[in-house]
Amino acid sequence: MNNLLECITEGIRRVGIVGHVRPDGDCAGSVLAAYHYLRDNVPSLEIVPFLQELPYGIRFLTEGCPVREDDGEGEAFDLMISLDAASKERIGAGRAAFFACDNTVCIDHHATCLTGFGRVNRVEPQASSACEVLYRLLSRDRIGYRTAVCLYTGIIHDTGALRFDNVSPETVMIVSDLIARKIPFTQIIEKSFTEKSLVEMKITGEIVKNSRLFEKEHFLYGKCSLEMQERYGVSVVELGGVVAEMNEVREARVVFFAYQFTDRSWKASLRSKSDTDVAKIALNYGGGGHVRAAGFSFDGDPDLVAEEIRGLLPETEEVPWTAY
Image (cartoon, rainbow, N blue to C red):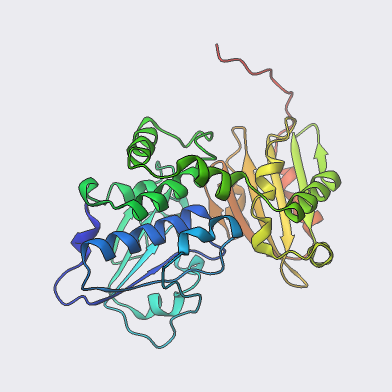
């Protein structure tokens, strides 16, 4: 597949678009970019974007969009498109509709996605984001304003505002093209990436304060229990930025953040600023992701999981950074 419009063959009237569970900026950005692009270029289609609840900072992406949070159980679609989901099991809203459809497309950038799980697949592990992969499947002269906003948001989120080492020269050229379309690029970063509510700042501060740094492994571990979430009055969608804040700690080369979402179940996020491939660690627990960012879910004691992960890390001395 070289162009998304190649998928809109004769007889396709109803299209569903899905992302992964607990959608982030790249997931929401790619799902809604595909929605706007198809709506603009094939107005005869009925297009249904499926997304679970979004973090507050990226809810602006859904303005005016008929986004659904259900599974699509019992509904028939002529085509289902998955974006940014590393596996079928990771699909969130619209999952039942995707599984029931024979005509499926998988667009992704996770190395753990391998060859994809759709009838048609476009998986580019070297890409910074699903939005970057999607951009290459769109005709540049057909990209509208709202599509550009969504693509830019996704790329910015998965590259840490172009700070992560998944950024390539082509990533920068794509961002340049999107900015040239007069999108509010600085406001998108502020509203969706850096701006946080006071309660988010407070709970993040407590998590960081109570975190533990294992100096020999340069490993930082933090957690957030249900009790803490209830005490601050936050939901799990408001904890998405915590791991990024922990990753700013100078002494940390690998970061592990776990938050509780049922009595025994936890969601874990891993980040790496070293040679450690955290996607491989996540695979040990049935998860996946990228070399520098990955995640998984688990049941049990997060302290024990943190010790297990610590045991996988080498003891290293801090080497002063130099650009030369």
